[in-house]
Length: 122
Image (cartoon, rainbow, N blue to C red; front, side):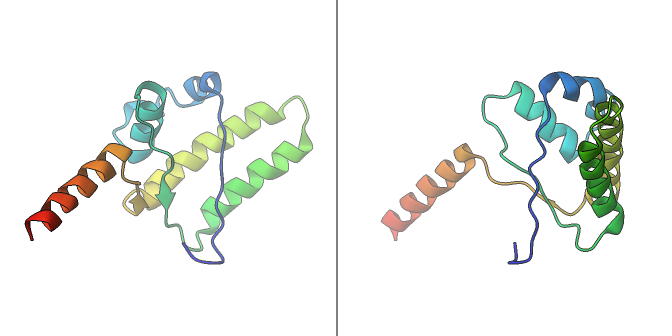
């Protein structure tokens, strides 16, 4: 990440997720694996990092959700859910091959113990 990076934390209720992502989780993408893993796995992936550069399509979806949140009328929640669905589908389509997934704690622990054993041998 760079100093001018923008990091977003999008919080989604489990019930909302199940409503809007039913079809999305059937796909074998990194986003669907991230969500399904975090719903049903003990070891959570804390985040996905998409390198979108200056993708105005992705930026506009985020801005549209923000504006709709500020509108706050009786249609806003449903509109935000639909924009969010489009956002994740487009994010996967446009940047699904350019995503970073952090190592799990188990992977880091295993790597650290392996490196420690190698260092002892040397």
